[in-house]
Length: 184
Image (cartoon, rainbow, N blue to C red; front, top):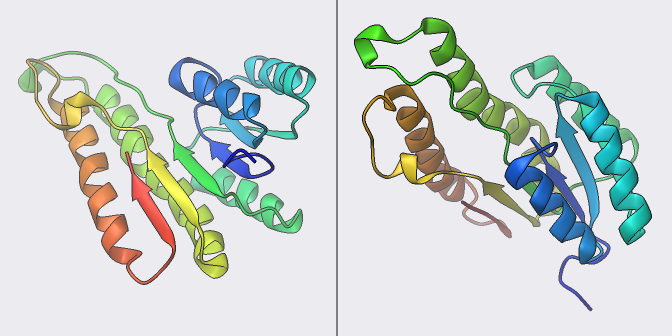
């Protein structure tokens, strides 16, 4: 039996790019999905395609991970359905603006920090307690080479992805003694 067949994976930022590709790959192997994203029409299309093509269950939640209340609402809905994700894939992220630090736009900074760091934290905080209570699961935080090596005008994006790297290490330390692991 395939390692993910019949399990549940939650993927943030599933409407495009890596998130969409990960959703398709997991569905292909029989994994049920909880997909999130900000674009309702893309999310609905993805849900329909994956259910039809791979005969898996797909729950779609349209919201922005920067909104803690919406993250909590999704988590509460999963709990009411008695669904605990086996895998959490924090994929939602973005790069906004590319300026020298002294020319950067505060709005770009806030968008990146709120999505790449706080969004990851909000989702992790709402889902991880369910995994800990069950004492099993995997958390995968999608990082970037920008979290290991800085580049010109990538200052705040680099910092946000360095934070993801640090959070991976810190989450693993917090999970010592459980059967849950975190990686990127």
